[in-house]
Image (cartoon, rainbow, N blue to C red; front, top):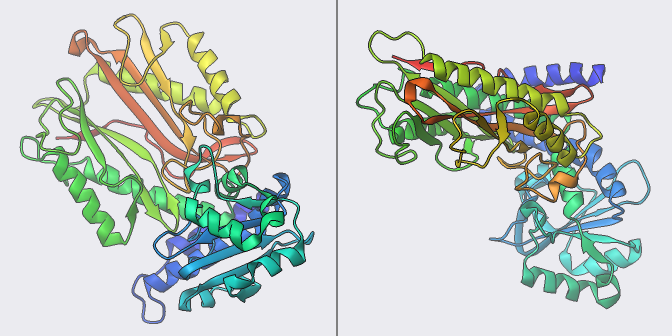
Length: 440
C-alpha cells in the first residue's frame, strides 16, 4: 500500500505538470497517452480479478457505429462499422487474452491493448476454440453501464454464436460494476485532477469574480462555469450545473433567471469529466447584506451540524462490508442522536425541534453517478455490493434544520464531495467543502 501511494504521488505529479501546447507534445496528445495508459492498466490489473470473482470465462462486448457500448471508450474506443466485438478470455494466465474483432482506427492501433485483431465473421470459430463455460454479455437489471447490448445486437450475437454457445451467455452486470468501480493508480490520479478542476471552478463561480449581487442570475453563474469547461477542454457530468437559492425565500428556477440578491444562500451541484473520470460535488455561498461579514449564526450552526453528520458517514466506511450495511450503520447512529431524524429528500418534517437527515452517498468516478457499490437506497442492487479498496464514493447528505433568523423555515444544507475507499476507510482526493463561501 505504501508503494501504491508513493506511485500515486508520482503519477499525479506527471498529470498535474503537463505542459499544454508545448512544442513537442500537445495537450491533446498528452491526454490521449494518459487515456491509453489508463486503459492498459485497467485491462492488466483490474479485469482478471473481476472476471474470476464473477465466474466469467469470456466477456464479449458488442458495439456498432452509432451505438457504442458504454464501456467502449475504456476498452480503447476505435472505429466500428456494422458490428464489432471486444472479446476477453480467461486462459488461466496472469493476464486476460484480448481480441478486437471489426474494430480499428489510427489511435486504436497506436495504443497496444489487444493481442488479436481480426474480423467479426470469425467470432464463432474463435469462441469454439476457447470453449468457455460462462460467457458474459452486457445485459443488466439495474446498472446502465452494464446494459449496452441492444435487442438487435443480442439477436445478431446469438445468431453468430449458434445455439450451443448462446446457451452459455450470462449477464455481466456485476463484472462490469467491479471492472468500472475498482481503480488503478493512474485512474485515481486522473480522478483527483478532475476533483481539483471541479472545486476550483465551483469556488470561483460562487464569488465576486462572477456574482454581482442584484444583477447576476443563477443562469449566468451556470453558463460561466460551462465556459470554463470549454476553455479547459473538459466535459460535464450532468449537463449544465444546477445553481439555485436555498433560502430564505423561494428557491426560484434552477440555473435560470433568478437574480442573486444580498441575503441569499445559494448552492451548486455539478461535476467535471476529465480523462474518463467524472466528479459530483456541491458548494454553498452566502451573499452578505450591507454591514455583514458572515452568514447568519443559525445558518453557520446548520452548516457545522452537517459537517458532523458527514463525519458520521466517514466513520462507518470500511472495505469488506456491504454498502447497504454501511448505510444502515450510519442511519442507526443518526436515529440514536437526539434532535436528528431520518427524513425524506426535500420533504422535511414540520417539527421544529428536530433536524431531518437524508443520506445518498453513491458510487462515482466512472460516471457522475457511478457503477459500483452505493450507500444510497436509490441503488438497491449496488447496496448489496461489498466496498473494496479503490472504490470511489460521493459522500452526499442533506440536512434540513431550523434557522431562527428565518422564522419557522428549515434551511437545507447539502454537502457532497468525492473520495476513495482505502484500507483505512474513506480518504478525500482534494480539499473538500469546509466553509460557506462569502459573496459581498
